[in-house]
Image (cartoon, rainbow, N blue to C red; front, side):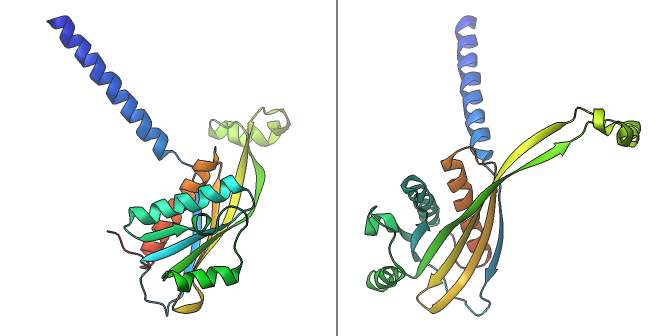
Amino acid sequence: MIRRLNIKVKIKLITLAVVLTAVLISSCSAPTYLSSWKDPKFSGKINKVMVVALVKDFNYRKSYEYRIAAMFEREGKGVEASIDIFGVEEIPTAEKLIAELEKSKFDALLVVKYAGSKSYTSIYPYYGSFSNWYYGGYNYMYSPGYIETHRSVKTEAMLYTEYSEKAVWYGSMQTINAYSMYDLTNSLAERIIEDLKNNGLISGK
């Protein structure tokens, strides 16, 4: 009887460990830093939006559009990815997007644009105490230290609505050290939706 209980306890502990590991993995996505602007004159709400990613690579374009669309759906909004409307052959022109916006009665058009990436390094000399720091100037050439290499991806996004010919929201984003395509686009999508909510452009369910 005791042996069976021990087995059950072990199974529960293993299950708990798996769940906690999954939570930790999902919460450790790449950080995305966002600076945004909203038209102070605009007070409308977005309920149905088309998402467009201006990215040449098909897989990245699909990932950008589908992740952002999934976040809108999570907030209870009507949404479609442009890739499902226009297909995968080409990125639609501005004229086609405007025509589809009117035809399918979208409230808004969210356009995401890849704006480049770069790598940079950070140098961390070994300083443990005040003495180590103070004398580090003398020993800098001999200090082993360590170097970290980081990768930064810059993305821009604009939100246009049927009520305005100009953008009503703009976001400039920088994502650091995304370890995969999904990690990059998921982090980006979460920050966009969060900022749109904070600016009162969309409301939750």
